[in-house]
Image (spheres, rainbow, N blue to C red):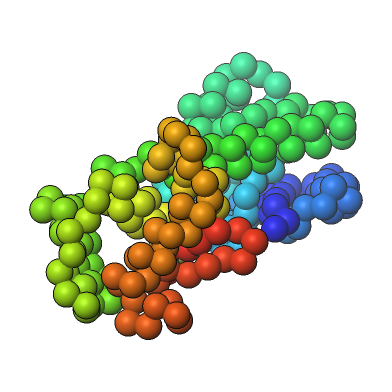
Length: 236
C-alpha cells in the first residue's frame, strides 16, 4: 500500500515541487494551500504524514498542528518554515511536531526526512499492536458471542466453553486491533513472544478453533477472516 503524504503549503511553486518529487518517490500526495483546507483533507483522506508550512493564510501551521494533536498524537508531522528562531522551533516541538526543516532546504534532505518519519511510524505501529491488552474490558460481545475474561469462559452459539491462556491473549490481540490485518509473525511475536518452536501453522490452528467456537458457519467466517498473503483480521 502506498503511503499518503499531505502537503499543506501556500507557496504554489514549492507545493508543486514537493508534490512532484514525492510522487516520483512512489507516495500518494495531496496538496492544500491553506490551513482550513488542510484540516479538511486530513480528516477526509487520513494521510500517513503531513508536511506543514507555518506561515499559512487564515489559520497558521501551528494552529493546524494543535487541532490535529487534539485527535491524533502519533501522526508524523514535518514542519517547513522560513522561521529559524529557536522560539519558533520550541513552539512546534511543544505542540508535538516530529521534525523541523528551515527554508530554504535541500530536496534530498527533505526526502530522506520524509522516508525516516514514515519508516519510524510503520515500525511503531508494527510493535504497538500488542501493547493495549489492558484496554480490553472484563467482557466483550460480538455477534451472538460473549467472552468473559474474568471467568475465562465464553458463551457461544454452540454452547459454553472454557478459554486457555493463549486463546485469551490471541482474542485480546484481535479485539484491540479489530479491523486491522495482523500477520502470522505479529501474532506469534505478541502472543507467544517467540518462546519455543512456534510455527505459523500454530496460528492457523487457533483460527480454525475460533471459527468453530464463534462463527455460525466456520467455512464462511464473518468475524475471523483470512487476509490473503497477509494473515488474519477480526472484523467486528
